[in-house]
Length: 305
Image (tube, rainbow, N blue to C red; front, top):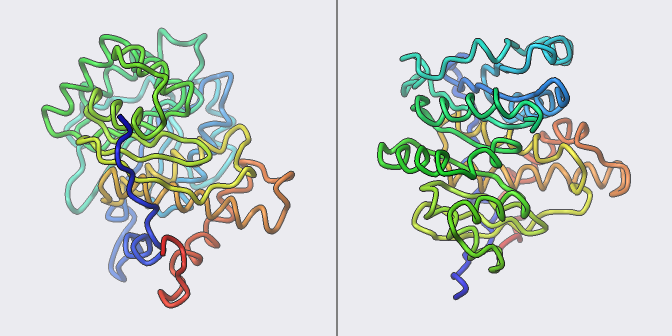
């Protein structure tokens, strides 16, 4: 049975979620995002996710990556704090954040199957110990698709700890198989089933992205462009959504706003560079244009009407 799908949110609704900073804020009040990302083989994924996060408003972005990726990540952007992922301790009391110092974590961008022994340990310990919102992306989704991953996701849900998954179609199929779900269902129905099975908000990425909450309610984000069909754009999206989680948005709102900003940035990049030439590296530079597109006066808002 196909689940009902709510339409894409109009600009005015999304603009109301934009976390513009208060005049008296500081970097910690603006949100602290920890990125556990970037294997020795794929350090660029950590860089792309960090670009999305910093441009999407996180006040403090730190990256925990493979030791062999440190030089690449540190040299990418002076504002980044980069540490070996052996220094990642998700169970420390301060990791949970507070109302004044909100936090979130993104894990999995650029994880390499050749390092699955180390990365599986990182993921499982983070699922177990991290109290603040957690986004699982990229290679970590394949590791989550396991009996241990399912159990730890259920334990997070029972404790009320927010979890958000951002799979593409292939990753969604693996998650479905691990949960004994039929993967050959339509995208919104699959997103809803995965959300219930893992006790998580799910943003199932594709030409249309379907966002399902933990009760299985689904909405669509249909602003995308084929210009975004390139390697690395999903890492940027994970960073954007992670930054919004770190700034206090709920998982569903962070996914809806983050996916819309990502799509609008892709459209702005396409207008400037052509659909052929847009790369993942371009997207963060066009996020300001995406913010302006959503924040335009409501009288000019025709999307979703």
